Length: 215
Image (cartoon, rainbow, N blue to C red):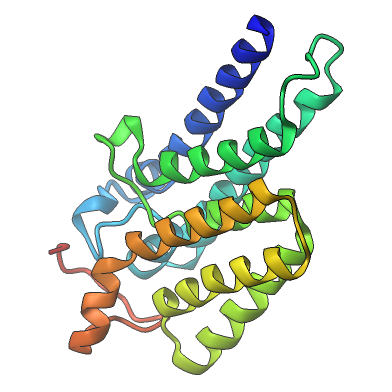
């Protein structure tokens, strides 16, 4: 029982640590000498990096943040194959909670005073490691909406909703379905400033550079 608790808590701590890695901030400092939190939307995620620093840095941040999500789930899943893991460890629950902590870590990084990005790229990495079919469904919805609106935030929100539907339709384990609901709600909540700008008609479209300080 004690070993199970130690393993569970250890994996969750590492999952949060992976999510907390401040990719966008470091790329901004290393490549351009810019604190990405002080420009554009103030987010450290790939979208704000794309708008303010360009395609190369934006793509690099996206790939690394995607990898953070994949790594967090891969770590949780690997526990099931360790010879000393007790049967009491609920692997689906461990995977789901690890995913949530990676999401929170990305947006509330301990290295950035608990600020960060909107958790979209990290969410996609988590979903790819959980169930690639669900991930593809989210990407399809995101791509379709962004193709019509050219607005990343509303496309991300649409993708989050699609994940919940896909998890239920595919009859994924209950912890995965709960992850989709809680994680999707969290991602939407992280986009509340974008929703305010959408209502005001000031939300920038894909490819539009934003250099003004965040409000």
